[in-house]
Length: 322
Image 1 (spheres, one colour):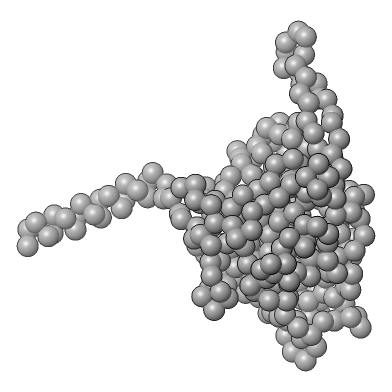
Image 2 (cartoon, rainbow, N blue to C red; image 1 turned 120 degrees about the vertical axis):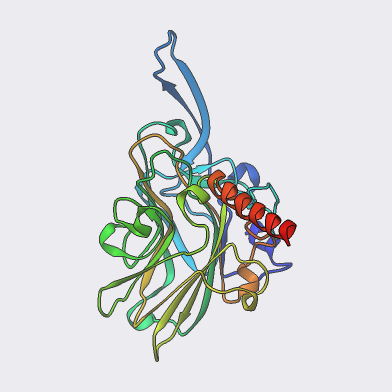
């Protein structure tokens, strides 16, 4: 609760969770585990990590969520926070990250396999006689990890328990289910009336080669109504007020339902670092959920830089000849 109170100077939040450990004044309890790594040396090298399983723990503060996290696969509260930066290293968070973050067991990174799925229930589910009529904003920091193995790195939310058959929203990249063609970020939303999903790929610099290892700030806006279509909008790394931004993806459905939300669902059966999730905010205004002041500066790949150089050389030559 102290963490939530600390935000009140500039935000009134329905929910805030920085996944802060109790050593940092938060809700989550760390444990120390020692893992033996088989690296063909005698004696084997042991690695000690401080973390804890997210499942079964209750954290965060506000009125939007309730109860403990339900664990489908391993997700850990890690000691390191995510920090919003650009590839040039500029920090742009309105409120600094606190405490920790959620990811897979760090002792098994860069090996096979990283798996995690977890969810927490909404205090008032969106469904049946509890359909909301209003606007909600949900923001978070997300780092999709590193390759070379991509497989499934998706933020999943559900109508029911955290399970494949209950998914109503997916944001990420997946070679398994084909989200984003397995190559770029996409948003996928289910219409509860028809049972059909609509998917929209995010257009700007969201290929794996451009998001790998880079922490992103995401804002989801839910326009919920009982008299028309529900609209889900996704803004990636928005800066400034809502009116200053255009959604990177927007999907309208006849009815959107959701009873629980999660961090990352990651299924990576090969080498690479697992994705991480942090700084969950839920609010009824944009300003209260906004936590980014710096644009996402895209750094072109070497081939793109070469092409830009050729174009520049051509323009220079034209000016000289003129």
